[in-house]
Image (cartoon, rainbow, N blue to C red; front, side, top):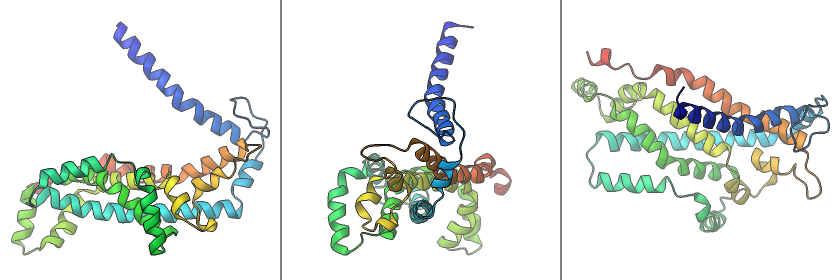
Length: 266
């Protein structure tokens, strides 16, 4: 084994440990009666999970689902249509616009939180649905690039064949392009969902009602000024991570499927 191979394997193991150890702590602390911020063998108990599934905690979990669902639908749908236009249509200044979108995908929304808050407050939008829409909008620039790459791979012969059958633009978009870019839609949807699911700043600033706050904000409530309930935090974090895991596993078939366009072109 060469020295380069040894160094690369060692680096990979170190990086894996940085990801694995926090997750191991989270699992053990969630069932440890006297959980602390240290990794140790647990004094087994299920009380932390019982606290985590109390009504007020589940309501916050439901708020996160609603917020992320709104963001995912809004962002993915808008990005899909925009990506099709950039990929298949001739529009003026296409390249400069794409570069602007690429730049916007790297701009954190946190730097605009003050003017956004003032706008939302003026319009009376300090609630969960407008915040979900905004979270969807923040994901659109990156989703456009995700989806454009998939749409670029669709052979133009398929669109030409559909046009010969008198299909209009919307029919081509939804009956030809959409079925063939399902893996791209899956990846864009997951990105949009995760982008909203883990967001803390926007909901805590833009949602007035405490009853409408999502799980990340509610999770912060387990950290008191004098004590931190590590066990409940760990248990609630595990429950909180389940939708993302389920979403990824549910869409993994789409990733594995990839494109099967050769036969379609023939």
